[in-house]
Structure formats: structure tokens, C-alpha cells
Image 1 (cartoon, rainbow, N blue to C red):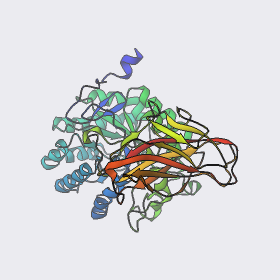
Image 2: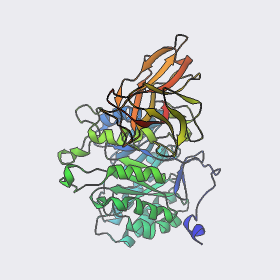
Image 3: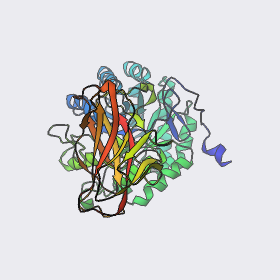
Image 4: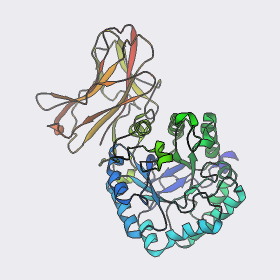
Length: 474
């Protein structure tokens, strides 16, 4: 009975459609493959030209999705341009309307649904079912809205969309300014049943109501146990020990960890442009819309961050464009031809740690010596690619002295010319992303070796281990 109840509308992986669809707890793309969002919110309706230009920077850092902050004042023609740009950058667009944030007025929620049924807007949306989702309204429903009122209002809004012929996956925000999981658990299945397409995804926002880190995993799991697809549409972090306007001490690392372990998408708030009271939530500096803040560095390059876990939707093909990464080596099925030099044992695959999936490559090393290399010494063709990435760490055991370092490198051409991304400090507590720009490297059609060089300081000693995972190119 549990299995039959939990996944009443699960579709087979082969049941590919003309666009995204929900199958049990998973969001599937039009090819029938799982798609897990890794991205940010971008304030298009408030900063039009800056947000449009920022899409390239967001994609270049590895995002596979972007939540388009929009409103009913936005034109269909501009929305088309934004979605087209997302497609060029191999990102999925989640279009949300910000007009009724915090409102309890059911008629205003239905006004948001009606916007998407306008002829010009509906044409844009329906022509992009493979590339865009409809997030009816941002955070409709305040803290005092009953779960039944949330259910009934969204039933009406869903009917408005489907009766007008809007075919996209619909994203429904929780009540309580997006933070209340209760109505999703109580009535999410009812909304999924109400939708004739059975194509509803639910979204939680995580700020002050999620300061208890233990709830993050348990609540997400509870929703998945009901056979519902859920995403984290916004989240913040512990800024100034909670002395911020949102009272937020939410453990953002736990948000990312739980999302990764459960195959749940996340979209951090927000790229930049927040007002002075919310400026701590800027992922990038508002002065140039490019330079990452400490918050941005955590989201993109922290453990289970965007750079190490993002995979482009398969509708964009296996070849990655700007901002879309192709995994070269995941080590999920073995060492994939990688070997070690200067190591005392290995390499092997291990489940002790991973940046993506469940396995990584590991080798034992004796500290105080080195350098140590883990590398693939076969031929590769990286023509047309711009960036090579890998995630690395070292084990907690052994005396690391002043700390280990690593660099990502390639050898190219008949002379085996060496190029690397520079020395980066690494640690034992979390993965560190290494990046090598390929733009100025010759003979990318003749790559002889891809590898990591690990360096141990002279004061280090004892046995330890080094790890590599998620080697990607874009």
C-alpha cells in the first residue's frame, strides 16, 4: 500500500514528453532524465540590463538553472529574450511572479496564474516547456494562512493554468512566506491529483524558520516519502549570528548537503541587488555584478556547491556549452584509467568522501615527500572547451604541517607542454574546487595528460591520503 500511495503518478523513465514533468519525487526533462537544479535567483524585474548580462557569469560558474524574478508588469517579449539567453547558456529558467509575496488574497494568486494565460505570455511559456518551469507566485501565503486556504487557492490557480492550455511543470511555493512545509505535507498530494497533468513540483524557502538544522533533512524526507517532488527555491545562511533582518541562522551547508544526498534542487537567494537590509544575501558584489562574496563562494565552491554538483539538463545534449559542465571522470564505476605517481598506495575508488555521487578516487601518501600525482595519461580532445575543473581534499590523518596544496594541470602536444591553474590550499574537512582556464592553452585537440599535483610542506609527516572527484569540462 505504501508504494502504491507514495508514487501514484510515477511515469516510466522512457515516458519522455514535450517538456519537463514530475515522476514521483523526481523532476524529469523531456528526454526522461532526472534534472536536479543547481542555481540562483536573479532579479530581472528590478534590474533588467544588469540581470540579463549577469546570466553569462552565473552560467560560467556552473549553474544549470536560474529563477527569474519577474512580475505581471514584465512583457512577453522581454521574457522570451531572457529564456532564449538561458537556453544559449544551457540553463533552465524558473519563472516566478513576485507581485503577491506574503499575500493571503486568493484572488490575487489567481491573477498571477492569469498572467501566464495571456496569449503572448502563454506562447512564450508553452514554446519552452523543455526549458522553463512556471513558479506561479513567489511566497504567496503569510504565516497566518491556513493549510486548507493554501490548498483551495492553489487548486483554483492550477485550474486557471491548465484550462487555458499552459503545459509546463508548475512550481508551487509553500505558505508562511515560502517556509511552511505543513501544507505541502497535508495537501500536496491533493494538488497533484487536482492537476490533470499531475505535473506539480513544490518549493520551500529556507530562512529563519529553518534555523533548526535537524529539520532540514527530516522535513525534506517527509515530503519525499509522500511521493512528492520538492525543491529549495530560496535559502540564506547564518549571517551575523542571526542578528539580521530575517533572524536567519540557517545552516546553508546542511541545506546543500541534504539537497545533494536526496537529489533535490536548490536555488540560492540571490545574485545581487538586494536592498541595504538584505545586502548580506548578495552572492556577488553589487559594485560589479561579478565578484563573488563569501556567501557566493560557499554556494558555488563549497562542499556540495554548484560548481561540483551541477549537471546540465540532458535536453541541451552531452556537449557542454558555456556554463554547462560535462563530467569527464566521476569514478563511480572505477578508476577510469587514472594512475598515481609518488603515492604509497592506490589509486582506488572509495566511498569515504565524494563531491558528487557516492565515489571518489583515493591514493595513500607519505607526507614530507612528494610531489604526488593522480592523473589520466591517455589522449583527450578538449577543443572548444574553456574551463577544466576538479574537486580535491586530503585525509584528516597524518601531520599536514602548514597544509597541503594542489594544482590542476594538463599536458598538451608532442612536447607535453605543462599548463596549470595555480597552487591552491586544500583541506581535510571539505572538498576544494580547482579550476584551469583552457582559453590560452595550445593543442587542446591533443591533450596527453589530465591530472592533479599534490604538494606537502617540508614540516609534514606520517601517512595520509588524497582524493579527487568530479573532473568536469565546459
